[in-house]
Image 1 (cartoon, rainbow, N blue to C red):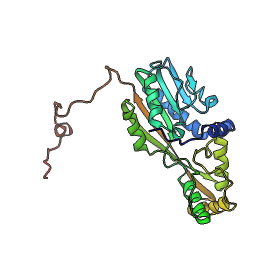
Image 2: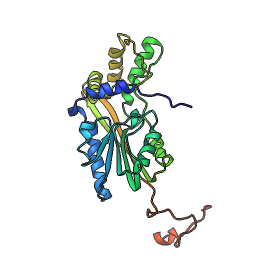
Image 3: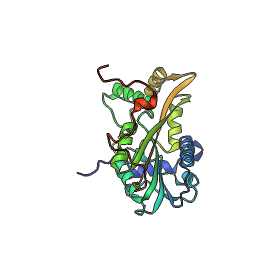
Length: 270
């Protein structure tokens, strides 16, 4: 069975080409977090790579990294890197687990995979407002905001890709805008507007965006404007290696937890 096509790659490339680096605040936050996590690892990486749709921004985040585009087939050599960072692009992938598997294959034993991507709570307000307005005006829906994965699903992909010691966590952020139109202008400046392959390419109904803006303002007010949610999910895992820590076999513990905690052990019927 062929992989469903989620993203119009030509449209996405055009949107990214028009992006304004000064508007990439989500990338700035993700880059700061990636750098902090690399410091916590306390290891010197000598052959890093970064997968991204914004090479000019991410080139300096990991010094000396080879920067490759987030194409369906990644330009990464097997076993060539001790660090691969997938930077704010996984949410546009038709095959997210395939992207992670390719990164895993590019890692040397005990190499580190890190990813930052937008998660399922991102733009939930905009999705709801546009959906309600379009349903009212046309009686149907068209895809206008890209579907994004939940943290539990993304975390499971790490194990499916064969990465050891997988970790997934999230960093939500609520941003206040003057109105929905200002939010959409910011999304254009980020290069994150609708690039879905299934999007309707006809001119939308004339009243769609004004109606959606009113719904947005009524449903999601924030002080003197409106609120928008952005959720960044971070993934980490290691290429398997013989010298990595391994979980103990069930029943192999040498001490009881109750003794360590200094409490009396109770049975399940208590």
